[in-house]
Amino acid sequence: MTRLLEGKVGLVTGAGSGIGRATALVFAREGARVAVVDWNRETAHATAEAIRAEGLEAEAFEADVSDEAAVEAMVRAVVARFGRLDCASNNAALGAGFHPTTELDRARWDRCLAVTLTGVWLCMKHEIPAMLAGGGGAIVNISSQSGIKGQVRQAAYAAAKGGVIALTKTAAAEFATRGIRVNSVAPGGIETPGIASYFDANPGIREGTLAVHAMRRLGKPHEIADAVTWLCSDRASFVTGDVLLVDGGVGVNAHDA
Ligand SMILES: NC(=O)c1ccc[n+]([C@@H]2O[C@H](COP(=O)([O-])OP(=O)(O)OC[C@H]3O[C@@H](n4cnc5c(N)ncnc54)[C@H](O)[C@@H]3O)[C@@H](O)[C@H]2O)c1
Image 1 (cartoon, protein in one colour):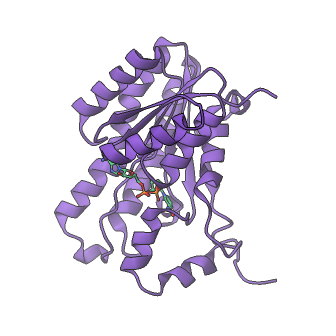
Image 2: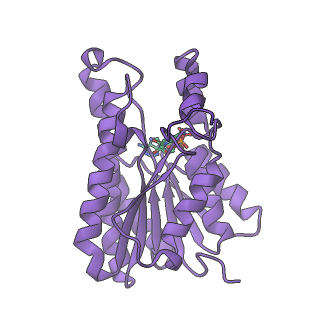
């Protein structure tokens, strides 16, 4: 059976950790040559090295997704290295801590929005022309169920993720006739270093988090990576502008039958 991304070039931001790292690995196992992008040079190189250790192809690129010059240079370097760009998962994000809306300070709001929302726009701004040059492509922006439903004490993060969904639908509509598909995956709670810091900062929240998931467990990074990879593949050729919840059934009347 043909691998999902055979012969394609894929790019993943925030690929030094968690969901992004798993996505870079699955992209490579499904046949893609992978650009591993993170602002953390060491972890980006570690992910690329882990992929190469499996005999697959990857290269690390250091970039802060909130810095347009860095994003532009990164996309140019990826195309120079691999010759083209076919798919991208814009996954890097930054929270603003945990504060009621009235107590959140402006600097945290601005930083969260700069990375989590503006970063996704900047990546698409420079990825889409590179994809068009190769005849088309597919983008999956990582949002969150909090971008749909809101999230207590995470106003900036939830607002940014809601913005990611609006950006996704807008770009999907703009480029649908030119061979570019743009979708979003909205994860529920996933076992990553990111959620570990959330649990550390909010004692007792782990149990409450599990309780709202109908499956009563957190997801694994590869469960998001698999959905992202399918959406990036030609098997999802008629899917665009969609938001796929991969969340173990958050809020599906999550009580025992
Ligand atoms: N883990 C969850 O439960 C969960 C739930 C919903 C949505 N998400 C979303 O999934 C994505 C991945 O989350 P995770 O839990 O794997 O996070 P993580 O914190 O484990 O990893 C995030 C990665 O992004 C990188 N990064 C942060 N800011 C960056 C920047 N400005 N430029 C480049 N790289 C940057 C970090 O260095 C890190 O490697 C995020 O968009 C997050 O909001 C996660």
